[in-house]
Length: 207
View 1 (cartoon, rainbow, N blue to C red):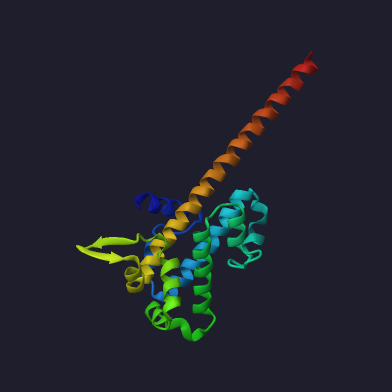
View 2: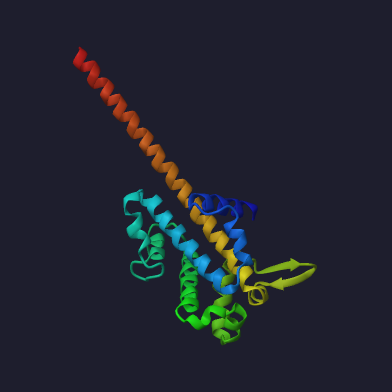
């Protein structure tokens, strides 16, 4: 788990976020937590796409893409590039939809996760547990008591979203890190080849 949050911290730095931004999200009310978490992933997904494609010149254009559009959204592109798995893509789409649920009606500014869960039917509750609890173990011992994933998600959905989101962010960061190293290596090889070519040309002209 510590490796996950180390990666999240590194990603914070790459996205020029203040140190400790992710940890402080848990202190926010449910509305602010959801909006800020969604904004974080918007930026993280854009950065991952730009890095993977090695196209900083279109960063602004990529940032304007809808996060969860099923045909050409950022999550769809990440999936096509194999930067995220199916469950991670589902998490990002549902997080974006949750964010929309909070912001599209100004009266929802005081909406809480408990109220949201309270209005769910059995199937909706089961679906909520599945995507929110993607990064939560099926069963854990907490303070000597056995706790299931379902009960944990329904009791503390904010914490579970935060934990699951950290896992997705960490995976994205690892993909970004690998892509950067590949591009840097290719650039280094390109410089070496060019340098060798120039040297050979100079030697030939002198001869």
